Length: 414
Image 1: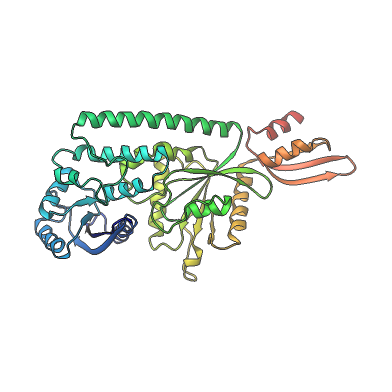
Image 2 (image 1 turned 90 degrees about the horizontal axis):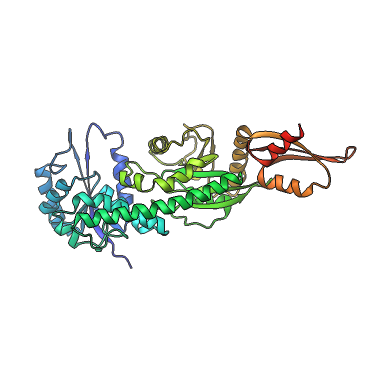
């Protein structure tokens, strides 16, 4: 059983972060809980700006030292990224292991990684973060493998020789490149086969995996915790009309996502760059919902995803108080994934968007072309199939990608 650590959270509110500070501290507490930490105290301060040496100033640092001594604290977690020098000064003063928000998130990612690619990406991110902090980190290094902020494939005995670390990072990048090349070939196959692809994005714990399970019965991990899903997962979904599409779940976004992770997980997030439709899953009951929306949309901009059609899926409607919800993103659908009717509601909304974005076609098929009709239903969105008795022919209407065989056939018959 994993030991629960007694942790103290530290945050500084400044004129630059006052709008998001309270929500950010709540999120930090949830992150700590996800990493098996028990928050026994929160140490908050208002300042015009961070102290350049200790974030909170020497006087407050001594108060924090007194608190950690009295409460027998295992770990102090700062809600702000610490420079190598700041981290060393703070830990030397407190004589208590200290990490920052970035290390905490990396630790959770390390715990969640399942695939070879996920583990490599976490290891690379951890090494990139640790690289400038290796020298003079005797106390921290001696703790590796011993609790929050020390887990994961990249947190075994870190070499103090920077050349070895550089060599290791180069090796991991090469392995990730090979994995990314394989992923690219798989995507090309799906593109060539004209498979309609749907991607799930959203703030962590918004319910992406629940939506994936709702549509595909994928039986993926569903937990009320941050970063429950780390590795991307693609599943097939057969729509009621017969069209087979793919639905890909991705890692959840978060405010102030560490830059090391954005870089390291770029190949994973590239999965969404070739999607035909993105479902932006949003926790409709979140108190800071609009902030979460903005965080995801900014990252989508960074990943150049905004040119892809997006449907805002407002989830967890069952947790909203009556008349207290006003959508801010369009088009949208409001549902609770726990409601049995929500699958039909979401499916119909997706179908209406597909009909707007895909190219309509009308084909005349003879009675002996039944096999081709089945292929049409599997690969395009067929909305009507009428058999005309007098002419002994099928009149098929549907929607398809412009390069699909249905469109090619239609053009050949013109």
